[in-house]
Image (cartoon, rainbow over all chains, first blue to last red; front, side, top):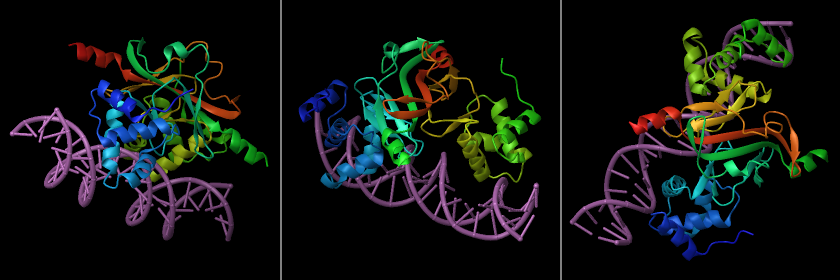
Length: 148
Length: 148
DNA sequence: GTACGTGCAAAGAATTTGCAGATAA
DNA sequence: TTATCTGCAAATTCTTTGCACGTAC
């Protein structure tokens, strides 16, 4: 379904959004595109660091902030310990397992898709730019473990 | 609509939930009941501290954690700077203004109420205990300011 | 007296800031 | 050159932990 973006496609996306395609920015985008696991700043930094020895965490913070401001990626606050990131594609809800901490993508509830995701709309006089649905509970796998 | 709870009612709620009604716990509950503004730990501490000089922030953290674990209050992670708390029991969505940081209650989107709020249900094999909807954008008042 | 509750001080973790050097148009 | 981008170190903020004292049944 979702196909990984190649380097050229990522550069194009950055350019279209008025972002200079530095190596660091391309790398963060590429990482988020190929790892749909809602990584934290730390995970992204630790993953990229080996191949980019001079990379600093500050830069990862800077890049992520920039990408969020351009709506290329989404910031998730579902985990109260750390902020997570998700490359913006199709609208979906997020589920966090209270036991193992894993974050999963789930479909948006039915009959709501028209108002959810990244498009903007007015609600009670407020301008809504973003909608996030967070589910919290116990995941499939943890349920099995508990029953054993 | 929503009526403020008196001290006796709060004590009863705590007792029913197997919580010893200490002065600190009553005070935090009472504060959350009478201030439906989604306060942070700091705001609660700063508000109660003058009348309870020995109160410590650790205790506020402890009390809030306990109340959340008993589902008497809800923890909101809509603001990526700090965790917020809400005693409001009726199902509703939350909106945060990206400009002024204010958090407002908004109605749940239509045709969804049956699955949202605090009741549990299964979804894709996962056990959902909690559902939160977060809207982010620019509030009514900030929109007016911008247009001036 | 035993278990529980509270609160101080310290530790820990996540994020931001200030600034200097590197890079690119 | 002139802006922007990067990254180190330090600072800041939020939250948790360890532990000792207090309190209640």
